[in-house]
Image (cartoon, rainbow, N blue to C red; front, side, top):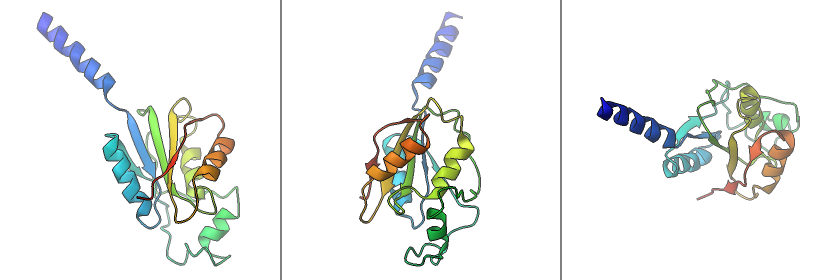
Amino acid sequence: MKRIVMALLCAVCITSMEAKTLVAFFSATGTTKAAATRLAKQHDARLWEIEPAEPYTAADLDWRNNKSRSSLEMNDPEERPAIKRCTDVTPYDTIYVGFPIWWGICPRIINSWIDNNLPQLEGKTMIPFATSGSSGIGDAEAYLKKTYPTLQWKKGRLMNK
């Protein structure tokens, strides 16, 4: 009987020590997905792709066209593109949120995902990461902190390689 109790206690201790980390990401071209996959492996974390309900086409992503879907979304701070499905964030203590830099900040679909998961994200450690051909992550971090001040944001990082 004593061995059974000890075995159960050990199982509870091991389970409670396991990393409860989620890597949630949006990737328009696959670059951020590759970074998210590396990050999830590094932290033995669950990987979750934030997918738009309507996938982006090449024309949608044409930032040079003021009427493209991405341009219209990014020019409207209230825009919240629909996401394909949600995930339960309650089991996680740490959540990495990944995205490509669009117009210096995160794409509006990240707002959709965060908004869909509030208030369950409160009290969790939130760490942004991003990919970009030319921008840093600083403006995106500042934007997220300002837009979601009740969340516990930690320093993020650019993960281009």
